[in-house]
Length: 197
Image (cartoon, rainbow, N blue to C red; front, side, top):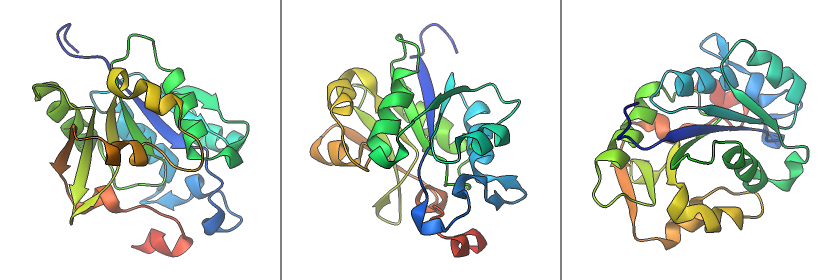
């Protein structure tokens, strides 16, 4: 990154219990030959974002092993039942203090590639004024990953509770930039059957 570009990190949320997935560790389910969580990490590492933080929780040791050898900062949510908000706060807190924005990825969205992340970053850096968030939209639906401006959203993000991410905050704001995207941004895996989709 050049000195004039904002510092944009990435946070991968991979702590969830995956209760609708059954007994297996959802993040480790293979998609196109690689564990879903590793695909998410490789996409983030190949993008313009950095550093990349992965938040582990349920099945932490197995997920850690699936991410072995990658240049990640790993943090652990020791109470994954506390929900997505706790993992998001932990992940953002692990980024360097000078980080201006963060791309938040979900570990169960295996079709996301570096181009999706870079499109969010490009839209953010080119916008005047900068938005509080950049959200991909496909088929009229907001999807993931999302880019969050930490200065504008920091207080709201710190106050998040329960099993949701930044979605409720972004619904209330008028300075969210929506970015047209392909259907990968609304494809996630909640059940083993979805892996075939």
